[in-house]
Amino acid sequence: MDKSIKTWNEEERPREKLMLHGAAALTNTELLAILLGSGTRRKSAVDLARELTTHCNGRLDALARHGAGEMMALDGIGPAKATTILACFELARRLAAEIPEEMCTIRNAATVARMMRPFLSDLTHEECWVLYLNRGGKLIGKERISVGGTGSTIMDIKIIVKKAVERLASGLILIHNHPSGNPQPGEQDRRQTEALRKAAAVFDITLLDHVIIGRRKYFSFSDEVASCY
Image (cartoon, rainbow, N blue to C red):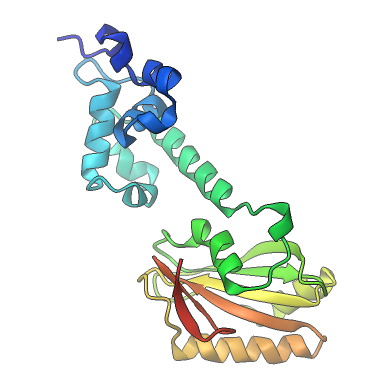
């Protein structure tokens, strides 16, 4: 049986449907089918997309955590299709992380969480990032400092302070994620925060906050509270 989408009625084809009604009119499966581009002799692109979403219980956030190998385990999805989907999710993360120019002056943890959540909330390992700010609170740099395991990551205080000095930063904000989804800090988080605060102060640099990103919430040391997005 010919499973090609080309045999469908024109208004049912995902690409044509998008052109006629806009992207918002398409289901997740139909949008994924457009990314996949084609199916196999036995399955259409929509069939493949449906298998992929079913494999992730219909959750895009679950699919976003998949690597190329996991996607390619499904019959009909090879390197080209898998990397296209991965690229799409990475573009989505970067778009979500962009903030309007008028918001580049960071005044609260909510702005930090909005900026960093696309990079950190879906990871299965910990990462440590630093935002560097000038005296007016304007963002002058953003950098990933380290990548760790599922339970911790190394925070090299000397490197963080050195990079802050090189950028002539007056303030910095530390961010890391908890893959468990629970943003509450542990004792090690508190010790590292205090150690960084003291080290930065030697160079007249202020540790403005340490924000921990969870799955749906964040914790701000500055606010000492876990907040929903």
